[in-house]
Image (cartoon, rainbow, N blue to C red; front, side, top):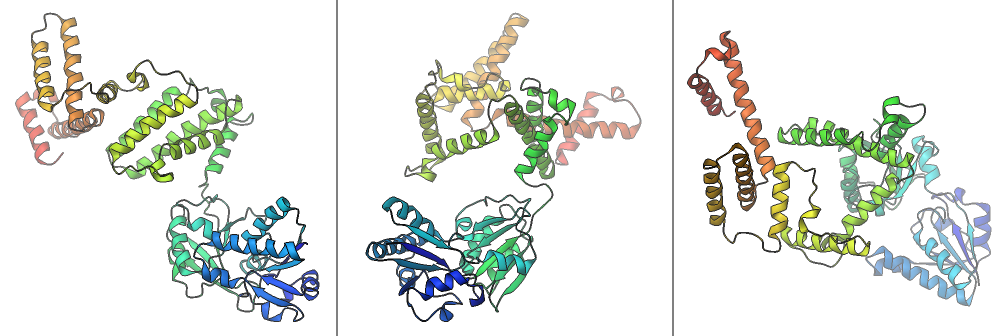
Amino acid sequence: MTITIVGLGSGHIDDLTRRAWRTLETAQVVYLRTKEHPCVPELPSSAEYRSFDDVYEANDAFEQVYATITERLIDAARADDVVYAVPGDPLVAESTVIRLLERGRAEGIPIQIVSGVSFIEPTLALIGVDAFDGLQILDAIDIAALHHPPINPDYPALLGQVYSRELASDLKLTLMNQYPDEFEVKLIHAAGTPEALVETVPLYEIDRSEHIKHLTALYLPALGHMSSFEQFQEVIAHLRAPEGCPWDRKQTHQSLRQYLIEEAHEVLEAIDEEDWDGLREELGDLLLQVALHTQIAIDEGEFRMGDVLSGINAKLIFRHPHVWGTTEADTPEQVVKNWDALKAQEKAQAGKPKRESLLDGVPKSLPALLQAYEYQAKAAKPGFDWPVIDDVIAKVREEFDEVLTAESDEHRAEELGDLLFVIVNWARWHKIEPETALRMANRKFYRRFRYIEEQVAATGKPMTDYTLDQLDAWWNEAKRNGL
């Protein structure tokens, strides 16, 4: 009552090992995961061969196929010794083998592995690549089901089981989330057989190949350009190392605080100016701050990058049950409502003290306009809000009058603050984020004033030689010009 799993090699009968041949030759019955393998017609004729191709035809999902094959083999092993033959090597891209190993351990059924030549070795020979050069080996079926590939782009990758053009279409969409559309890749067909073929194509064309079949693999060269997150962490760790940079080694969480704020504002500026090259650069500078803080934490034994990433991944999945669960949320408002409830649940489960005020969740370091906006939005959730916008407008007028009638500078400053606060509320009613609105107004003022300066400079006179009406005429001209 044993199961012997035999690797049939990559395709050519000459690649079948002597041990595999002897095992098949002495078996009465050999179960084949599939008879769609080039060497099957040349296997020893002394055995009876039974394939599981009917299971593939009867099921649409691979999971069900693998489960059915595993169950049939376990049932057969309870009655007699079983020989099970799979393409390539039993421990390369063979889900049924992993399932059998788990079931065999659980039920006390001995399992032997007879290794074979996998698709990897002849594939590497065809394209002249050394596997020790950081080669990553993945299942194309798994990658095609994702939205972003779990691949380090600084190293090459080999993806097996690109068995159809439909799969290749899904696969390229995932890969193009990380690699350029025109990135040159290789499709390797029927490696290890006389029909072996290598195609070099741009990534976006892989699903157009007419040669794609069950023995097709995809090779991705290294993207290079130090484009991986792992390489970025290496650079930061080197900067903080004893042989690194004295300035970086000296930094602490507190000393970097000002740079984090500055870089965040520079990101916002690039967004406001719709400068996408600038945004790319500024996001890198902002990411640098995240990586530096994390490396400091690593050096101090506080936490690691894996903790940061696993924490935010778990949080996002937990707070999006409408994406990863069964909860429904058809509107952004429902998403926010669910988010707040789940956030409170998280804090309770973590044993964190309950906030004394709804407003305690708003950071004290936010810019004043944005802080006022968040305060009002928080207070409005339980109903502390005017019922109609006309009430807000009336309050704006009331606060404006109070500024005009203030009897001292101190009183006037207080009333101006109240006026600004209620104007923020007015903006909230219109779903306008006031910090962004004011930044846009500032940019507009800059452009128009700069136009005035240019007109004045062209005359060779100082600005003080011109009246306000003259300067205002240039302002209106800038406005007409769309500045």
